[in-house]
Amino acid sequence: MGWDWFADPDYWASRLVFQRLLAAIYLVAFLCAANQFRALLGTNGITPIPRFLEKTSWRRSPSIFHLHYSDRFFGAVSWTGVAISAALLFGAADSVPVWAALVIWAVPWALYLSILNVGQVWYGFGWESLLVEAGFLAIFLGPADMAPPVLVLWLLRWLLFRVEFGAGMIKMRGDRCWRDLTCLNYHHETQPMPGPLSWYFHYLPRPLHRVEVLANHVAQLVVPFALFAPQPVATVAAAVVIVTQGWLMLSGNFSWLNALTITLAVSTIDGRLLDAVLPGERPALAAIPYWYGAVLLTLTALVLALSYQPVRNLLGKRQLMNYSFTSLRLVNTYGAFGTVTRTRHEVVLEGTDATELGPDTVWQEYEFKGKPGDPMRRPRQFAPYHLRLDWMMWFAALSSRYGASWLPGLAAKLLAGDRRTTRLLRGNPFAGTAPTFLRARLFSYRFTTPRERNETGAWWVREPERTVIPPCRLGADGSAQRV
Image (cartoon, rainbow, N blue to C red; front, side, top):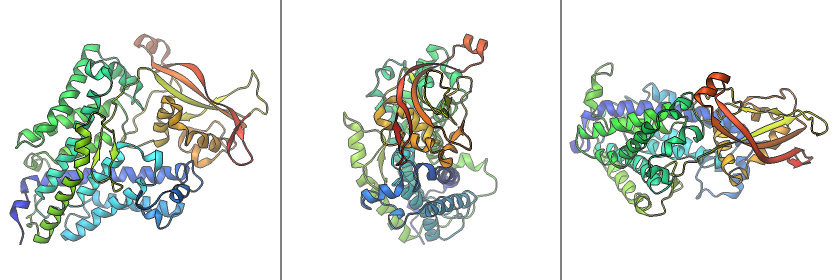
């Protein structure tokens, strides 16, 4: 027995594809955590979790790591998340009882929330909270043999609306270049982590850049309202979101932000269109049980109540970007690139094994996996994988305050030859040893012109500007000390 008005069988395929895509993103997120946490957050990491837990309460940062922390336990949590995500990707929750599906989907949400809430600066990105919020709503979508719950589908649309409209409003209230349609004259070159096609996007004709910006405004400020329209209008709106997010995926590396936004848009598509392309047949769908209908009503009331602050933020003049109003990250506000930098800067770390410093000292550069370094190296595609250290290096180049809490610690780890830290890099010029001195310099970068590219084969031109970290060496206390 159940309440038919809670369900819409037409969205069976939409829910199924949404769940598969979300499980895949969970899988990537947990892999990122498992592969990078020891160097960044481990007991001997740059910003250790135990130190953070000593200063932070459960209420402010709910996490299972308040109950127990060790590097081994964190690793177990991350790899458990990988395993459960893989199981969900292959349909482990498709044919289980409704209560079991709820429990199974709640596990990756709780595990990732626990990681996010102790992740500090390394997890301070909008797509982290977006994954947690989307994952929370996914808990209540039910198994594949139950009719899709309409209320949750509408809550997913509300989340997608806030993602898109929030991003559009932060741009219109921010940098003037969004209003005069010139931001893309700079963005592809100065974005945090360019991709293999970013150079080509940068050199698209200027009039086309203006069309791109205008299309972005339509996609983020007008189209989101159509997500709440009847079909097929809502499907068309979702298709616009998918196309624009796909364009962004081609032009840069934004972790899983674009993939997750596309995933949310899929939940809005009329499932009858997807039925035709999915293998197999739709099973006989059970009705939503009465008790689950009560759960869905409670969920909807909770989200609506928590939406007050995000709506107020959207309508206010001082819009916050990527902000969570609750420690459980349930209903958040989103937005990105309210300001676009005109000149690209990069912090370049260099070390030397010389015993004394002088004018003839030979410095060797540390290369990162994703961020620009060697001008001859073409940017690579990493998204949806998230290179956290590379992203934070981009912020450190914007202002010294962004790197104040962790950049000295990174320098100390490199001076100590810490293998976990150097594994986050593309290569270690001091493999098997450690530098005696280290420094950091700020460079300005720009894409080569097509002519320069043809003549030299380089992707970037760079010029040194100033020293960020003067030459330093490892002190007796394990910190980086100036010489």
